[in-house]
Image (cartoon, rainbow, N blue to C red):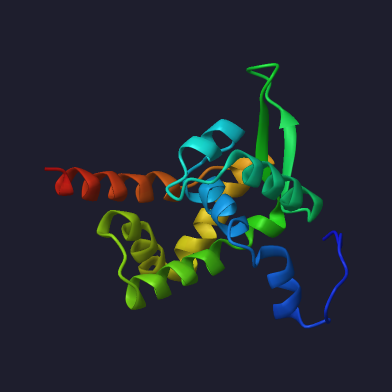
Length: 166
């Protein structure tokens, strides 16, 4: 992992927060993991929180500098780049699942935006492992196959969204 800045201490919690503790970094990683958003425009326009383009560009640079994502030319379009999660970022999936589970229990969340967190928490380590393997296939080009946790989470979201539409 890159260390692009002066560190306050060697505490693992502090070091992690120095990389991920700003307002947007975890949300960018969330959108890449759970929203399968890999292009700048997707990350910009499909964010629930409405990230500004300059902030997104800054966070993508920061996440690349820290070794959490990579950027490559998109073979389908010369002027586009595709962002991919690295192994250290993929290993954050269980942490994001736990944060989401905590939020569903203690905060006033919407049903449709919390259904994925509820399913991930209920699925526990086996579901997290399957999801991380799926992310490795999608982002790192690892071979193999397995269930699509992402498709399961998306289907649950869509079902709740459809049920809640007027």
